[in-house]
Image (cartoon, rainbow, N blue to C red; front, side, top):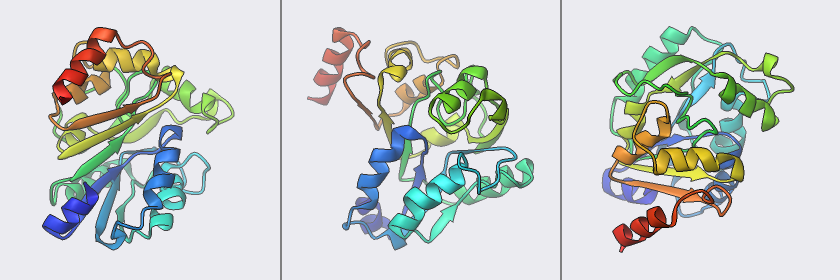
Length: 233
């Protein structure tokens, strides 16, 4: 998808996710010699409010070290968690709206969140970025993944790309491994489209691919999996 966008339009505009679910994927992606990373413009999904880029849990630090510097991307737009949240959301929102997004790489949280849109998510706003309050399930996940020592250290608010903005991408790729994501996977892929299961919004997009492993897919029904196979055939 990145190569096709560069071939057809001279550049690719992408959205990159963070978190443990993306680590192996980013290792493979940045090792690809077939991508002209100088022709790629990158945006990222979310960042904690009040988080310095030097903090081990900073998503800016994550992307710089694991993606931007490794790939050699020179055009990127990071959400400054140390800055004024209203100014950051406005400025980066204008930048992302300058042209269409070719592909968004995302994950699904244990509570079904998409980016930092925790349930009940805002499915209506057209604003590219929002200032959101993180729920306890989301904050506990950050501790369990090892980014923070305790929930008291996890910020309570974040800047997040909105659901509507994510769905504007031409293609969406979701990486969702591990058994701890199985309930969210079932709710978001098999269940009704609902703000209570934020990533269920992906069902509305015509070009979504979700990569699961045996553990994260273990609760999906045989009938659901059969329907996916039929649709792809």
